[in-house]
Image (tube, rainbow over all chains, first blue to last red; front, top):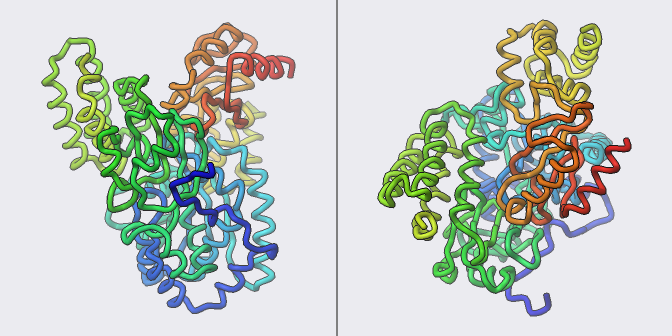
Length: 388
Length: 154
């Protein structure tokens, strides 16, 4: 790929020192305020998809009253089309653990957890080995912080932060009402920072390079680089670290197979962008945000099948706790099948669209609220495919 | 019965007896027994001083915590979009022909169970499947036959 039009970056996976845990050793000597200010200055926003400013999350948790606080690394990567966290954890686990330890120092936590999805259980032996090395190093640094590994068991919803805490506490992975937010009541109802795997690595990157360097990448609203998981109809599927804020047409130029008709940005809970909108769509918080999932579809694919597959997914992964999501997902799936079969007229799609909009307002958590994203963006842009 | 009791005791000694220990203990039972029986759930409840309903509630929430008997090797084929686009149907067909069971079933010798599952995180190398915790990606019918033949001889 010599004629690349997109800026490739190699910060997340790049090796920077032979000395293990060098950035951690240097950072824990710095005052907490300085670390928070660096993060604030860098403009870093969470890499799981929602994009909350990391500095603020840490600051609120540091300020929250309570003697016991926790750091949790969300490695319950379940969004269809996402596989970057597995790669990060298997290639640069030290950066992840360093980021967690830095967070522990800033907020005053002595304990961290990595919640790894059950589908990645095969990573456990190597991660345990790495954790042993980590614990030896923090001990040498005279710093009191330990990390424990917890496993999920095949539930997409546990990637939702409050459901993840419920799961860690031994319960059903059912999201809680918010507020309170994790910054005041997270794991065991104690103040908790929960960040995506990649966010912790970004923190280490900012500590090493300084916020100014980090800010040079990306745009005003989307600073830095991002690891993208590219799949679907592409000759070069895989994991790529790219600058944030690119236009989708340039992405498609590089990754498409020449016949791309749509890109699903942000997985099943994200948005479907049709060809005619590629040139006006920015990938980032100012445009279409993504936790990294980029799925390309060429003109041989039926977008009805794509939507049906997503709705199957949501119906099964809905925790069933709140009615809008439990019943809504089912009705949306049944609805598009009925329209396709001709049992319902095309106007019924408008009814379904209204249903998905009410789910956006009334569902308890991000899962139910986000079903409308893919539903309306696929139905609106590919209506004929839904009917005929 | 005594065997399961012993297993649960060992797991509780290892992970503790608080509510927080419940998921690791359930996972430990599945790793050993392939599923969590009613007897196992009642025993866990006793050991952790929880109600059986609480244990049942958690156990039945997670798709990898099976509550019905499974074979020694549980095959989970990813059915989410990119694996589906890249030939998951053919993979299922090959597995069904080879094992002579349908999705959701277990072979009579209790060696294999065949299931479908949601996104496994191998979208760039689909179709993919897990056999117990081990992932296999970039599957073709030939590759599946080779893999399953090896497991059959185990």
